[in-house]
Length: 224
Image (cartoon, rainbow, N blue to C red):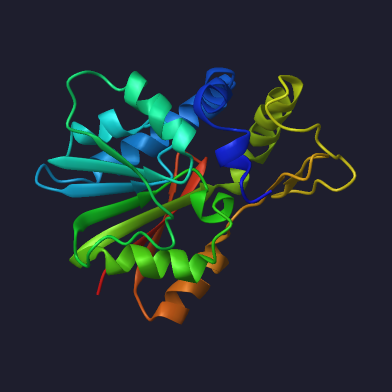
């Protein structure tokens, strides 16, 4: 199911996932984006990994000088070009987050939110290493996952997606706290604080853990 977000949950289907989200999940979306946006400086060049159709990019652009979004799902990127406000300076590109081919030191901030570190199915060490490579010295990489405190609401949201056939029926025999398993083979996991700290130790970089809105857990890696 590595191509789930490129083949199944992309473009309008991806947008629909956000449209049907319950109120507490909508609050989580807003709080997560606000945290990232408020972490930016007006001069920052920002890259979002796994941008989808560009849902968060206009909000980030309000607080930065330049915003680029990359994703592997071409359908979502093309859909995003029709959805973004016109005119726009936001750039979209199809790239693998673990191997972007972007030059070293190209961005002040790299962002990977809403559990992308789990959802991408890329080795987390490779993903963070690549993000740090393209971030300037002293810049930062912001990665987020779900807080355990929002597990019940997250599960409810995934059940709504299953009911709309956006993903397979939830396999309740295999789903455990932190891991949602669907009968079509889709599996949604969660990255823990210990997981983030392990990545930081392996790469020899410093990081800061911040929980936002009791719904998302951020790890902020400092680029050496």
